[in-house]
Image 1: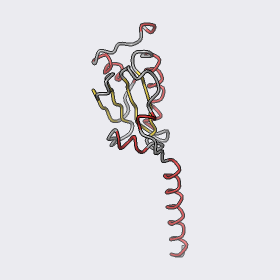
Image 2: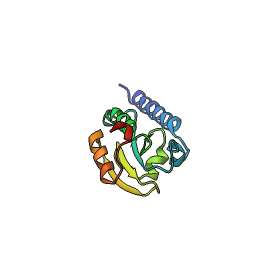
Image 3: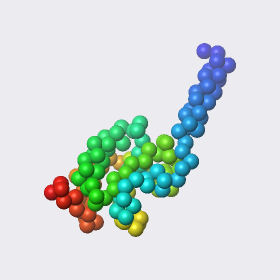
Image 4: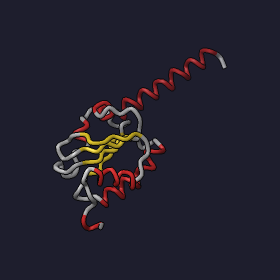
Amino acid sequence: MKPVIRTAIVIFVCLLAGAAIFAGKNNGSADTMVASGDSSLPRLLDLGSHYCTPCQMMVPELDALSEEYAGVVNVEFIDVNEDQHAAETYGVRLIPTQIIFDADGNELFRHEGFMSREEMAAKLIEFGYSSSPSQN
């Protein structure tokens, strides 16, 4: 392949990648992205990506935990590819990252990588949050 063609292809790919990043960038703050649910409750925040395999494995785990802890703990997800500001705000180094906050917003626990529903539930119990009464 001629060097000129190779260079043109590299430039084109870089432009596409830049456009994809720019299009996916969300300038909203992380606080507005996770403002769902009762703000007086503690929360478990999962920061990941829809394109990351371990993050995709977290989806059913988080869904089950959300049901189990409904009304007790808010379970939330932020896609850091869509909201890069959130990754900076929460100091994400690796995805998925799970953070447990108390009702006042203080960070109690942080984990990087896949975490099962059972492991997350055990951490919530460790901090005094038991599952919703209807699930017991």
